[in-house]
Length: 214
Image 1 (cartoon, rainbow, N blue to C red):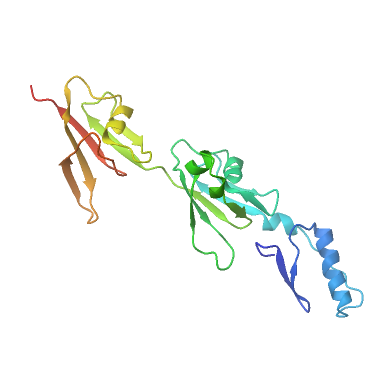
Image 2: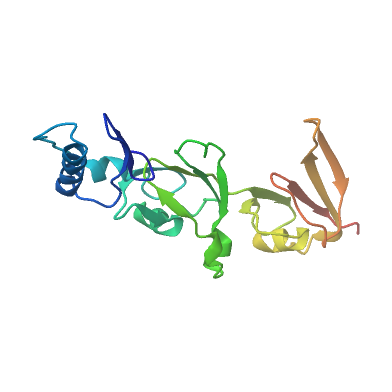
């Protein structure tokens, strides 16, 4: 049974069985064989058509990764994430949906933050056989003269000042004018340079707040 609920039946060809119970699917196939005079008294048994076609895989940073059965032919991606216990605190808002059907091999990036903000058009359908991967959120590292150095989750358009505020702010010994960033370039090499507090950070940036000059 395909993701669209269709099945290739010998002699008959393609039949639509989506949404039918196993008994209903068996009767529809038998009736088609009989009406086409392919078999006079066909005995057809269909088992677990729905259960096998409605399983989706959810991997990555969710609370309960695994395989889950959809209640219907499709479900919204937010509902499927809820089946897996919701997102882990370290999860990214960008979720990767890998469709399983023919001609749908390209992964789809779904921004969960837009769905939470009320954009229902981003809450795409998930079908049986699809896979969902939730990656780890991008982080920025803040060290030096801050209250609590460490790794912090990056939000959209986060500035250097916002990242420092997550680390508790600059200590009395630190200087707002002596903030530097270590950033890996496209060539794979790390570069270090001074930044303004209003500059936007990038994933895996290392922010270092130096002592003031007294």
